[in-house]
Length: 121
Image (tube, rainbow, N blue to C red; front, top):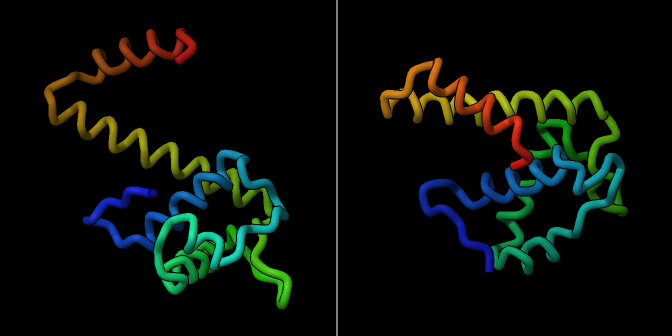
């Protein structure tokens, strides 16, 4: 069973999971998504929750509908790359804010990051 963060609406968390599958390449351009019912069963949520998540993804352009066929990942690879680029910036900013609040300097962070990037994490 999927564990959800009680502080964030479930539909947002589901949209984020699917978005991450798209930007990571687990879901490929033009790939057909699972049905609303399948996602609802998978995540053990109401189908309306899944529909809202998919609607958000559709509004962002990452997903599109084909009438009577289903929902598909966009074929716009530039959009996928753009979303991926924005996501890494968000994640790095969150990490930096946390480290700065703990008293780390830019130099300490840079040195540690450079060291870690030399390793295969």
